[in-house]
Every structure is written in C-alpha cells, then in structure tokens.
Image 1 (cartoon, rainbow, N blue to C red):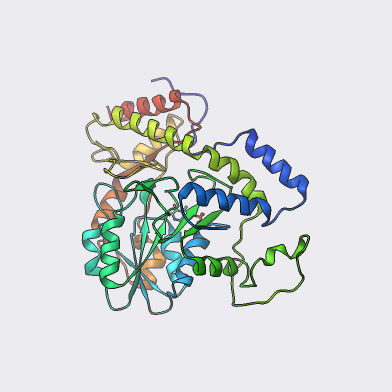
Image 2: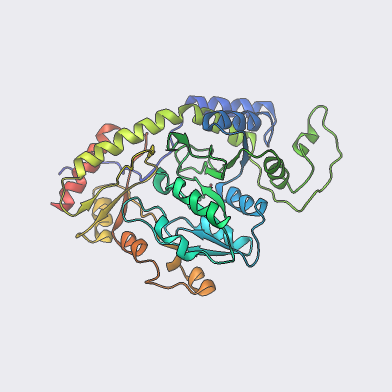
Length: 380
Ligand SMILES: *Cc1c(COP(=O)(O)O)cnc(C)c1O
C-alpha cells in the first residue's frame, strides 16, 4: 500500500471559529476566571444531560475526588472500581484515604463484570465507582440493584461518556454523582476541565463551596459589581473551579457535541464492518439499550503481537494508543495494596491484546479508509 505523507495523529480536538470568537470575546471582557460564561456553560450542560445541577470544575479528577468527599468516604473505607481505567479513577479513592477494591471486567464491553461485584463487598465497602469504558455505559440497572442491596453509593466516572445513554437516559441524569472530563482528548473539550452532575440540591451547594476553598457561596462574585469583600470559610475546600476562558471553548463545543457523536458512531460502524471479517481481530460490540459514543475504538489482536502492530502502524504514519494498562499492574498499587499480576485475568488478557485506533470527528472518511487499509495490510 502507498504510505500517506503526513502523520495521522491518534487524537485531535475539533475546534473552529466559534471557539476562537468566544475566547476573544472573553479575553476582551477582562473577566477570565469563573464568571458569567462558566455559569452559562453549566446551565447548558444541565439542559443537555437532563440533570438539575452541573458543577463545573478544572478536571474530571477533581469531580471524582469531590464526589468521594461529599459522600463521606474516608480512611478505612473501600470503594469498588474496575482496574481497566485511567489513574484518576482509583487515585482519587486513595486521596480520601480509602482502598480501591478492583473487580475484573467483562470480556465483551471491558466494563466492570457485575457478576463479580458481590464477592468483593466487605463490611468496609461504601461505594461502587462505575467507569463507562470507551463511552459505552456499564450495566447501571444491575449495579443499582447491588448498591441498594448492600446500601452502597454509586459514583460514575463518565470521562468517556458525555452524551452516552443507558436505557434511553443520558449518563449523568440518573441521580448518581457523575463526573465528566473536558480534557483535550475527550469527546468535547475545554482544554482541561470537568464537571459533576447531580440532582441533589444540598450536595450541589456543598460541591460549589468545596470547589472554591470551602469559602461561602458565590465567593467568585466578590470582585464583580454588587459583590462583597466579605467571605467565610465554611470548611477546608480545594481550588477546583473552572474558568471563563475554559467555558468559552466549552460552550460552542457542547453545541457541536451531538454532531461529534454522530460522526464517531458513523466512523465506528464503518470500522466495525470493514475490520470484522479479518481473522484474528475482535472489534468493539454495541450492547443493546445503550448509545455507545465511541470515545475509544479498541480492537483486540488475538494472534498478531500488539506492540509490533503499533510499530507497523507508526511506519504507515498512523498514531495509536493502548487503553489501559490495568491499574493493579502499576508499581504504586502493587506496593500499597499488594495487588499482583494474575489478580484480574480478564483485564490482563484484554490489555495484552488491545490497541486503540484513531477515531475522531476531525478525521476525514479518507483517513478512516486509510486506517482500514493499513490494518488489513499488516494482518494479511
Ligand atoms: C481522562 C480520564 C479521567 C480524568 O479526566 P481529567 O479531566 O483529565 O481529570 C478520569 N477517568 C477516565 C476513565 C479517563 O479516561
């Protein structure tokens, strides 16, 4: 096959004049930090998701951390989570002094295997953190049944899953504390950023206080007209707020989100169709009743060595990635909690075979076809 000239990046955000103009407007206004645009952005996300409150933050990591704090999870507690995720999911559990208790994943969706959750529950278990891998919802019905039975809280890590659905409802509208990421590589971006969704008025109010040092409500207004110099520290919070500079990028991105998702699904299905006949490849599955938003396009290589495949793709000028190195294989988690290789065989098997192909709305159909051609050429 003929090798393309320029390198096809693994991922790239899709921004246009709308983001640039909104950003210029904000810079000209002179109000850079949390202010009117951040509030507008929050209102629009809440409408999009169908949830009462959105509390914007500087990351999804901050969202997971504050979710654990407001649910009262602390030293000595345990939180159940998939090991097949990014550092942030389990690191935040460690930040509050609790132990991440990993539960292996399903072979088909790479989400937590709900049939293995109950065996991991102890008297110290306080919550289940649900990661919606690649933008396909985990089985929230089954997880809720288990959580109700054992009186556990649910926290959703929806870093991949804004706009995704479970049983016809958007992820984040369920009433569970749900965190989104607007990091540069995610389905919509503010550069760095995140938000928590909740339907609970008092939790929302506490989150708004905790994201800004724990100082009294609306402290961000104190430099504006009608703002007061007076504030009180209600509790010891964090510096986790979003800024108007970030919201300026986020507002137009949110307007485009459904378009982005449509494109991702379209490209994802083209890849599914073209790659599924190739022997030795397992393509992603779409489970019924969910709206998989294809944040990641993971394939499994059942006979070809994964690392060699990545090198061959790079030779053909295509960027790829791996999602994820299971958390229990990382030195910190082994040293601190005694996890070891062999503990979660499904996650390990998937990790050894997994490679993520580029899939994002900024790609052209020619880019998608080129990826197909390259994969076919390598595996022929
Ligand atoms: C990206 C990611 C996060 C962290 O998001 P930030 O906004 O960078 O903090 C958390 N969980 C998962 C599964 C992610 O992929």
